[in-house]
Length: 313
Image (tube, rainbow, N blue to C red; front, side, top):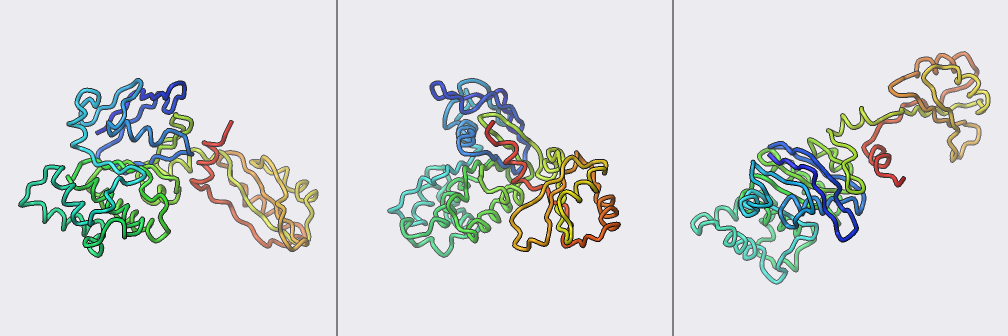
């Protein structure tokens, strides 16, 4: 549905987006992740035709955004990070105004306002001034604005930025509901949100794509090492290393500091690749007088993968 080829954007000498290429499929919820300054907002602004790229092409349903930007914009709804609202207007009046400038016919306007207010959970604040409602409701009004013309594609820049946990859950619910019928591209700093909401995750760093896959596949393909955490009673680190170092698949054994109980030794065993030596470790410990207090394999999380891919060189 959206084809991006060698997309590049310079701000004077600063390269914000560096030759990014990707394809976004119809009906997909795509999460764009990256640290501050990675190029996420610049990428979204180019996808919506808000700013022009320095180089590269964007095609939406075979329309070239460089030459057919108005036709492309008719297919899209865009919510910037700070929703551009008129704070002195009532929510109902504001959305009615948006419906008018979006070309919705008069005889269909009220039914569309009713439909969009129910979908975005705005019924209780439609009579209120935008200046009086919470930030969570302001985000919902911005989302309703972006969806007013029933676009095929929704582009959302940090839609949950600054919201409390309950508001985040509600916006996430709305996005998932909308995603059943539309293509959605949104940027976020909240990794759990991307993992729970997105069909696909693209991580960018310093203007380049460093990962592109589903959350589960990223965990499998990018988890180069697995970790096993063990806590033992009546053990010392030297003896443990001597006993476990001979097991195939273990690359290192290190002591974890910070336990209040000094009689308990906590260690972290780093395993090579996909190897899982837990059975061999257990057998070795079983033949000693050590007591196992804790023994678990650390889960590969999206947060760890994100930190690994975006850490500074």
